[in-house]
Amino acid sequence: KADFVIETGLSNKAATPTSLGDRGAHLSLSGGFGTVQFGAGVLSAAFFGRAATDPTGTSNYAIAKYAGSTRNNSSINYTSPNMGGAVVRYSTVLAADNGTTDTALTSMSVVYSAGALTIGAAAADNGLTDGDGTSIGAAYNLGVAKVFANRVTAGATATVAKTKYSSFGFSAPMGAVTLQADFRSTDDSDADMSMVAAVYALSKSTSMTAYTQKVKGAADASYGVGLRKNF
Image 1 (tube, one colour):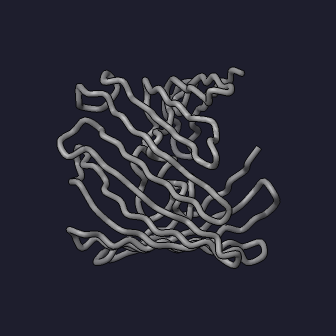
Image 2 (cartoon, rainbow, N blue to C red; image 1 turned 90 degrees about the vertical axis):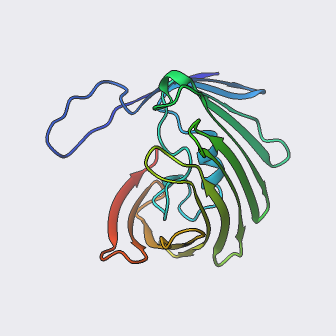
Image 3 (cartoon, rainbow, N blue to C red; image 1 turned 135 degrees about the horizontal axis):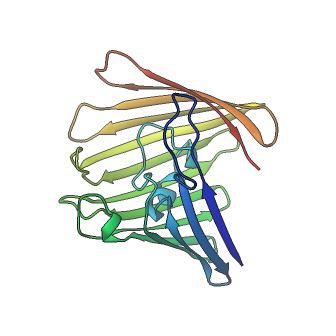
C-alpha cells in the first residue's frame, strides 16, 4: 500500500511565515518486504533504535535528544517486517541536505523484542569529524515497573563535541498516572543530568505530561508540560 503525510507547524507566538508541509512531507510504500519511506521531515533509523529503550520512548523529552532526532530532508528510510521479534531500520540523508558537510548521513538500528525484554542497538554517521555514534540499550518489564539501561556514544555536531554516557531509568504506571525518571552519567565532562516526569491519561487516546530536567552545576532546572492526542 501507499501512504503520504503532509505535516505543517503552528505557533501560538507572533505569526511567522510557513508553508504547507514545513514539518514533514513524505511518501511511503509498504508490503511484505517492509516499508520504504522517502521525502522531507523524516526521523532517522538511529532515533527509533534509541527510543526503544528509553523511558519516554519516541516522545523524546528525556535527558538528551537521541541521535537522529532532527527531522531530515531528502531522506530515504527502510523498515523491515518483524522477523521473529527483530525489526531492522536503515536511513540516509542525501549529501545536498546534510547540513554543512558534502557527505550523506547514514544510520541503522535493530530492535529485538521478546516477552518482557527489549534490546535496541543503533549506529549513525553524520559525515563530520568524529560524527559517528553508537548506542546499545535494554528494557525489561517487571510488571510493577519497566526498567531501562543504555550506553551511548553521541557523535560530534557542528557545535557539540563527541560525548559518551550511560543512562538508567524507569517507568512505573500507577492507575491513570505513569511516573518516569531518567539519569545520565557522562564520561568526559561534568554534565550529568536527571529527568523526572508524570504522564496522566485523560482517556485512552489523550494524555497530559509534566516534566523537569536538571544539569549538574546549572543554577536552574528546566520544565515542560504537554498535551498529546493520538488518532
